Amino acid sequence: MRKEDKSKVIENIVSTVKEYSHFYLIDVSSLNAADTFVLRKECFESDIKLMVVKNSLLHKALDVLDVDYSPVYDCLKGTTAVMFCNVANAPAKLIKDKAKNGIPALKAAYVEEGFYIGGDQLDALVSIKSKNELIADVIALLQSPAKNVVSALQSSGNTIHGVLKTLSEK
View (tube, helix red, strand yellow):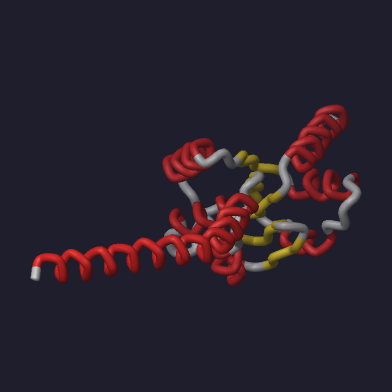
C-alpha cells in the first residue's frame, strides 16, 4: 500500500472514531464469507458501522486522537474488525447473540469513556444502559409515587362506593 493510501485510510479511521462515541475491537478471523456477510448485515440493521482495518493503521489513527487509547494497543494483533456505534451496548448484544464458540470474539472496547479489555467483559458491556434507557428509568422512578397516590385514591373511592351501594341495597 502506498503512503498516500495509508494516510487516507488513517484519516478515514480518525474521522470515524470522532463521529461515534463507542467502539469495539473484535476478532473475526474464523468467520467464513457467509457468516461475515450476515454479521455485516446485522450491524447495518443495528446502526453499527463495521470496519476491518490493519492493526498498524488503527494504532496510528488512535495515536493522532486526543484520548489516550494505549490500553487497547495490546489487543491489536491478528485480524481486527472495529464496530463503531453511538449506543453503548448494541455491539455487545450483537456479539453475544452471534457468538458461536467464541466467534466473533471481543478483544477490547471503548465504551462510556472506559476501557474493557478481553472477552470476559462481554457480560458487563451487555448490561450497560444507554443514555435513553437511563432517562426512562429516572422518569419511571419520578412517576411511581404519583401513580401510587392516584391508584390508592381510585381504589379507596371504589371501595367506599361499593360499601355504600351494598348498604343502600339492604
